[in-house]
Image (cartoon, rainbow, N blue to C red; front, top):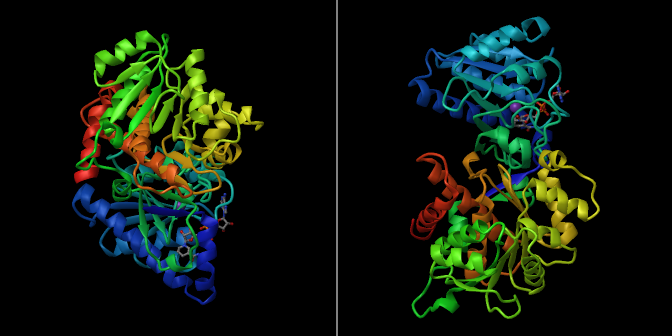
Amino acid sequence: MISAYPGSAVRAAERPLLEAGAGPELMQKAAYGLYRSAAALLAQRRGRIYGAAVVVLAGAGNNGGDALYAASRLLARGAGATAVLTSEQAHPEALAAFRSNGGRVLQLRDETVSAALALCRESDVVLDGVLGTGGKGGLRSQAAQLAVLAPARLRRGESPAVIACDLPSGIDADTGQAAGPHLRADLTVTFGAVKTGLMAGPGAEAAGEIELVDIGIAGYLDAPAVQRLENRDIAALLTEPVPGDHKYSRGVLGIAAGSETYPGAAVLATGAALATGTGMVRYLGPEPVSGLIHAAHPEAVCADSTVPLTHVQAWVAGPGAGVDEDQRRRAVEAMASGLPAVIDADAIQAVEPGLGPQVILTPHAGEMTGLLNSLGERIDRPGVEADPLTWVRRAADLTGATVLLKGWATLVAAPGGPVYSQAEATPWLAAAGSGDTLSGILGALLSTDRTGTRGPGHYARLAAAAASIHGQAGRLAAESGPVEVSKLPEGVRSVMADLLHG
Ligand SMILES: NC(=O)C1=CN([C@@H]2O[C@H](COP(=O)(O)OP(=O)(O)OC[C@H]3O[C@@H](n4cnc5c(N)ncnc54)[C@H](O)[C@@H]3O)[C@@H](O)[C@H]2O)[C@@H](O)CC1
Ligand SMILES: [K+]
């Protein structure tokens, strides 16, 4: 499990150590961690550090200090380095160390922006030390120009690699918001604790890979604000069939999805649920859709029945439901059933406050905007996308349901409880039908859940696990070309096999 803390919480945890005079020691630990990651990346890309070209973008504060000290160590290994100072001040001791190891310095001004950009483009690695947890608002003046103009994060795998020191500059360490232009990284080396700003919204996109450097403050931190499940956490949530099981005891999933207008969604949700390993799918919906489901998945049991008359352990309602009145009624009944229920797509419009955490809403940003406005908030889609962490929490608190907000980093919030962030997905998963498969995966996990845990956050954990399985299946599929959503269940089966037996 990866735990993330707001930048403000990390600063508070550091305070007693700083007051005790440990600031320089903490900075050396951070700088050494950054140096190690940069050295490993240079060694991997060009075989050696000697002769590498390094650019440090250094701001006025300690973030710049970390980056300058790290670059000093690279200089000592035979790299060449230039510090581009984005402020009139720089960390005095770190800059002195950098100069004394042979580092060159360029003061960033209007007339030197293009020279700084050229240096970046010709370098092997750029260390972004403009702003860290002390940054307020977005990048200013010439540093902002650099961020706008720099092709920083050039294509992955090509030079230069951009390594963010603690967090990409211009990103809010608490929320992941970008108040203006910000830098993007291939790798973020973060100190003391992962910041929540790296787990959500623009910050999650800008961070690239994340590496954590232990600087000895873990014992001073409280509960994490955001968590990310890793495969061993997910494996602990999964249930394998045991001898003596039969199809009903393994778990039956009810799917009320698809309509005559959008029949495919039901087929995709059913396929994904079966690949995740549910004991049985009972499908409720119009006859033409049942016919398609039977053709694709003969094991599914189809009927045009109602939710109260159908015996299942969990529900999926909404994908492809369109304006079908029967499907809308089934979604309402599923929410009222007391059973775990995934409420997706069109069914989200039927949501009213007063739900329980066993109801899991799975909107994308557009559906989330509609939901929030129906609950009395005034927010547009760009507003949701800019600060998804705030809005996913708000939606969970307003509805009482668990809410999964899809995105580059998918966020899951339990009402009043923990938040999870999963970022395994590939942009190839931004495709029609992708969400239908996610709802099938989550439905299957809910229907087979035998962990016996019902504490706060349990459903959020299962939803986060589903998002991760979906993302990993997408990545696997993308390895052999563009992702065809109808083939995604094959990837799901293979991810499940790894999780269960790997
Ligand atoms: N505090 C600690 O114990 C440690 C801090 N470390 C590093 O220190 C960083 C925090 O250092 P600081 O508190 O000095 O903060 P920063 O280095 O993030 O920046 C603060 C400086 O930037 C200026 N500034 C703020 N917002 C700006 C903006 N939008 N545009 C331009 N300038 C702006 C401020 O006036 C201040 O001079 C962490 O992110 C981490 O990298 C590490 O060395 C580990 C130990
Ligand atoms: K930074």
